[in-house]
Image (cartoon, rainbow, N blue to C red):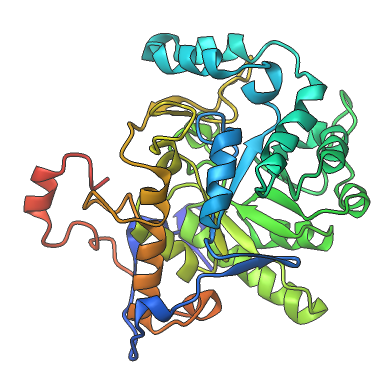
Length: 386
């Protein structure tokens, strides 16, 4: 497989959202009669969307609101929410910074130590509202924060890093035994991020209850530019889905895969599902919500890195309420609102009654799909087509 890129060296072709299109089905279904439910262990969610664990996207109020709408908002346990008792002023400073000073300011504001008592407090604030509490930490802090979150009543714990593997080598710090950690947790554990068949399978064999797919596609992530690593999301999702299906056939355990990042519009989200995803994690689109803590700004998880930041603060603007973005009605015509409506309408167009059938729809390679016949739209909606 692959094509020659030079003498004796082959590379496999990979595809992103802009290069493929979904083929309409032979049968169509009333979108209202489609089912977008997805499951993790014995938990069901009618909205197959997770708001990303980034400080400009999810705070306690945002997590509560996402839960009320039927989805999940993941709170970052290593950001401003656990470094400051009242993070509002800090978030305001980040949003008010100039582009030139933003990364340096974020680095400075993330230097104070995490206050462990705030871990349980944030979880409890979400639970007190009757909402689903999903929280995230990096592998190096997962052992400690996982137990603190679990004791506080968290429903889901996410172990998230730029590149996740079950074998991480270091002589400078103790590495996480992922399988032992998952075994020790009584709540579902989502693990990420990965982009290959083999690593997806490894994470599932270690006991992950769901796997996040995506390295570097997010609007606020600069990993691909800084490090040169990543796999376009369509190919990454297809490969991860193949691992999921193989694992299910072998064990009888179905482990959802969650495409994470790179989706700007409802069309991108639909392509993620047809590529094989069970749910999606979205950052920048959620940062546009009026309720988002970033006040129209969004920054990557690795932005605070002291030596090699791999994230940037980007201006998303504010386009509408979280309800409008997730469930509609859409007030814009660019595909950035009413994601669930887009999913259900696309499911109806391909004849899929549920997410599993949606995953079986046909994809074609179509690099002109977003520009064909759209010259007037391009001139009227600057920046709409990437």
